[in-house]
Image 1 (tube, one colour):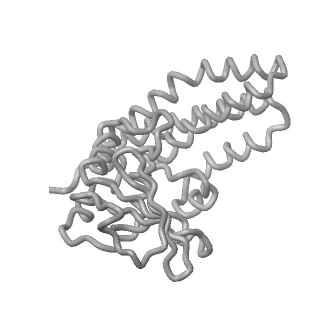
Image 2: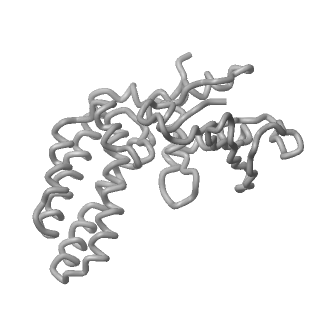
Length: 244
């Protein structure tokens, strides 16, 4: 069992507690402690539980160990970051990397922690390749949408592109990308690249949609360059494999 989220990361002290419980054999409502005031919500192979403990709201995710380890394996081989499934394996890995271990009787938690110390080269390359190959098309469509004053389309395209930029950026700097709710705080905590942060500020402060299209293109190109430099100069930190 480990704790993750804004409270355990020290970003907030007034939010719900998020606990992840990885089980060899999944519990049921009949086998859980009855002193908790909780609501049980099945979700695929796992279950979510919303509980109240000492007047504190607690969100518990109960996950079978094979399912959890499959998520970590997906990101190790370069998958688990596309689509809209919840939870996304890449965010599971980010949460695990920054988590606080609370219970680890068998030592599985320590093994999982080793797996998420750094992103694998396969993951870094997959996301960077997607950003590099999709960028010209996105920029062309953004400029067309700006010219047509099609603001809904412009916003949708920019959001899709910006998400891939964020993923590639965090991975290029050796971190799994966190859930985006507290991005500014994570930029500070992880000492993210100051040049890229300036370019991102330029995007948000651009005076018009055409200017923002140019700014996001410059940001994306800089992220790709950083990722390529990291992979060439120091590929070993991205191995993603436990030390022998």
